[in-house]
Image 1: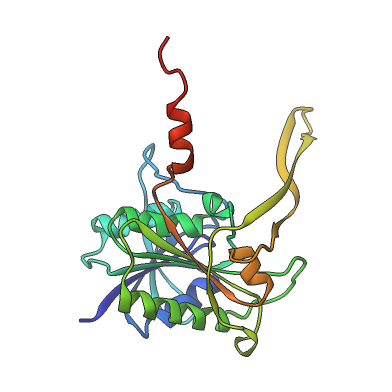
Image 2 (image 1 turned 120 degrees about the vertical axis):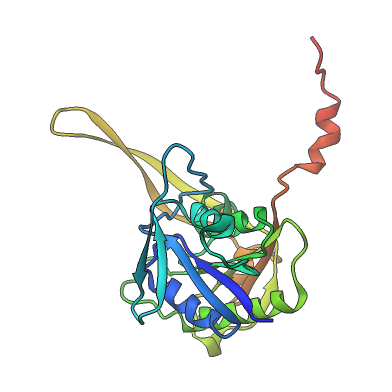
Length: 258
């Protein structure tokens, strides 16, 4: 039976990474595109309840039909899986994001949380992100990352995913023949260098930017950060259950009565 695949992202519906992913997914089934109408990078897992969501049809660079919403990436997945389309989706893929989503990035990432929203809806979800070197200027070649996405999708179609599980796939900024292969990894340690930048507007009122240097990571063996640093595609199975099981027994010994 032909697979029904939903493609979304957080860089916006006209982002070249989405087009590259959609073209690759056409090898595996019927592709439907629903993506945000603007960049939602760092938007996290959003559920818009305070206003109506709007949807319109657009055409991608190659003429492919797509739909775009003024909601977040997770809203786009919710729209698609809750009935905007008549199709029942077998898989949701998100990306290809410009920039890796490693370690704690997953809690910020619209790319990853779109895949999480799919899992909440009972549909397997995969997030794809391409590492971009700091200071890179110019167009990005998504051919190697799209090929890697195809390998991941083929595996998920063949084997399925456990309930409440998604895959977070990160691809190094390398040509296809330079990639060393795939590694199944856990989340690594992402190190943020954020700082608050206070400025003053012409009316002498303060305003703020959250800025700082680009995040770095600890390239520990077995982690997503480590795999990318060695030229491997990182595949990290993630789960929706955020319970800190190692803390349960300790916290249960605290005094919880007045």
